[in-house]
Each structure stands twice: as structure tokens, then as C-alpha cells.
Image (tube, rainbow, N blue to C red; front, side):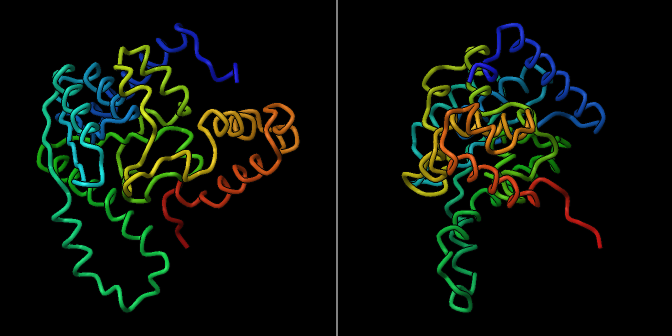
Length: 263
């Protein structure tokens, strides 16, 4: 959809706004700097690059799960961190993950949803590591969730959704890819198949059931343009089932975008 394509001028404005936002957040918190989890994917790579342009002190954490996450992703993350000049640590989460899983009384619960419950331990463990660095070094935690993921609730509550600031929260996934190219992020990262890395072979688009370009077009119509599903169908030339699916997901995941309610 052409409305989602940003000009070079618009991309430069986005770059400046995000840099200013990160710098302001660090200043308001009187923090030493930031910590960002780098997976080797496009979102975290863009956040790390912009963080390095914003403040002097950026610490990156690479938190792979061995035998599940692609080793190339770690290599890409390390290479980019070195290129942009940020400090980093690599911590494999397998031992911590196994400790949680082995100590949990699975037999006392219905384990039909065990795969997803187990998968969500991983981003929550990564959040723990991010905040350890935050607490030890007086840093704010930068999130790496984009607008598409936020609207669809496609993140783990108190996991990758656990952060102090979302630099990419105003940009759809397809726009983050545009910004990545504008920033000179290597194509091996910018064009990588998006995955949350929750289990081997998992990809975002296969799990959700449509391409990001389709999701973004529908969400833009429903959210930014406040169109009815019927009008969104006509505007996007996508079928009614896809549009209604997006609308339902947005409604069902509303709780993930707000602080807990107070009764």
C-alpha cells in the first residue's frame, strides 16, 4: 500500500524523532545509558543502531537459545554491534530455561497449551536479563516491538513487551524495514524472514497466517484511517476473512497494550 511507503525525507524525520526520544527518555530517567536485546533481526538491529546515535553508552545483550535460534542470527547481531561500536554480552538461556521448566509442576495442569506456555518463558527470561543490566548499570530498557506487533498483541506480556520505551512503536513492520535500509542495516538482516524464535522453524507470517504487507495494509485502514472492515476490504483488495481476523485480534489483545486495570 503506497500510503505506508515512506519518502527519504519522512525516514529522516523518523530517525531524528526516535533519536530525540531515546535521548530524552535517558535524560528524564537520569540514566547512564540504555540496554537493548539484539536477536539479529531487523527490529532489534534498528533499535540498536538508533540507540548508538542517541547516547554514548549502549549495552547490547544477545540471549540465544542453543539449537532453537539460528546461529547466523547471533553472528549477525554480534557483527552489527561491533560495527556500530556498542558493548555486548552473549548469554545462552538454555540453563535458565531448563531450570524453570524442570521445577514447574506440569502434571498438575492441563498441558494441551504447554508448547505456547513453555515458549513464552523464553522472552520473559530475556526480560529478566535486560533488567539485571538495567539495575546494575542504571540503564533504561529499550523495547524492539513495532506497531504491527503492538496492535496484534504479537509479543509476550512481561516478556519482550517488558521495557521502558518502545522506539519503534509508531512504525509498522514494513516501515521498520524501510528505515533499516535508510540506516544502512545490511540486507542479510533487513530482508531476513521475521521470527520470534520461540521454537525451531517458527516464523511470524506462518503463525499469523498472512504476510506483513497484508497485515500492515489492513491495520492502517482499520486503525489509522478508522475504516469499517467493509471499507478496508475495498481499500486493500484483501478478502473479508483476513480483515475480520485482524480486527478480532486487535480487540482480543487490547489488555496487552495497557497497564493492569485498577478496581
